[in-house]
Length: 79
Image (cartoon, rainbow, N blue to C red; front, side, top):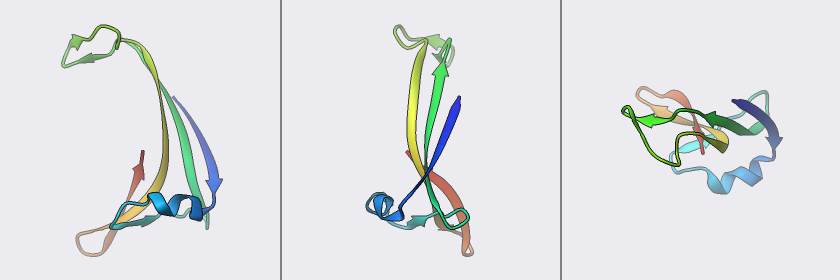
């Protein structure tokens, strides 16, 4: 697994923020992350699927906050 984090302008992300959420800022910046995974010996409930045992996956994500319960804010990521 590898994480590469980049500071980006909030204006780039705002059109992609889901309703009911707002961008999460860290030290005044918004970030996107490129996350790389390598899966090996992959199985679903113990059953291997041909052509899906070993593969790479990359996620591009950014971070948001949303209200939950008594005005508590939760953090989440958008992939």
